[in-house]
Image (cartoon, rainbow over all chains, first blue to last red; front, side, top):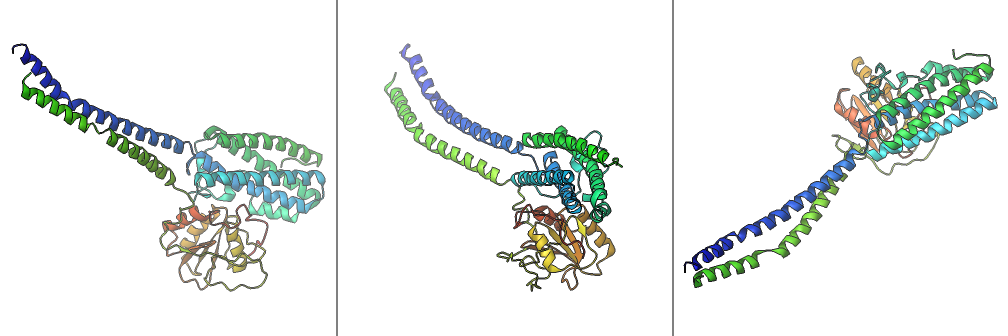
Length: 226
Length: 201
């Protein structure tokens, strides 16, 4: 009995503890479930944050560069109507087709991100923090973006013809491209999305080489960047 | 061990074995997993999107099955201003454009087909209100604004198949409408231009 008693106690202790492992098992299963759910949410959150937001630099760049590009397309069509010079007409064709196609790419991004195509708070806000851009144009109108021709300048281009139209077009487009390069550089600084960065990089390179070309064409026509 | 103690131990053992609910744990575990995935998926789907951005605009009127025919004839529209329908081959230029005279419906409808929002106001609207609306339009490519005689509200915003009437230029629905419908998902001809056509009112 003296030996039995502790054994009985042990058995009783063990019996008393039995519910604990069962409780631990349930707890462990619940913990795993919670972890799985948490991991699922974290994964989805990471997926979401990988997508540029409607107010981020990627969306701002896509919106504002689309507006900027559409004026270049307009000017290119105008000069093709106003001159027969093959060099200028070919350059204008190149700018119009390239930039219109890029507008399509940027519009598709905004569609995929569920981002608005316009920001009623104003253009260029996303560039406010970019060095070299004091944000003076931030919150301004579509036609006050850097490099944009005024309505009066566009109307003038539509009136000119021949050599005069070519020179005015080249001058306006050089200014337009320089600001376009700056905007694309801001996107390279501020944007994280790889597709956005790649297009911005091609804009910087492409428009820079077109600026060189247009400066040469201006010199050939005995004019300066004005 | 006393008989009663052994009985108790066996009883607990039996209880224990009966109560480890493996079937239940697996059953609810699977349900839990499915629920987590489903909730996560719904979470992903509920991302704000411009596609449903306009759905929450109070007083929004919508219209489907609008004709997209081109005609140089005058068209009778069943709303004023129209929300879409047959239209002139020439669109009204809508590159952030403020017109101070009424536009021809048939041209402005073509602009809406290209994704523009047309802001119209009743002639005589307070000058500060007109200026506030004009500032928004000037900052918004693919929008145009004009007075509209006989309007039954001070300000009406229209896009293809969408319309909302507001009393005040400061109404937050103005910005919400622009965000949702400038080149929005209702656009029948995405990618089409807002320049290169009719430039005068």
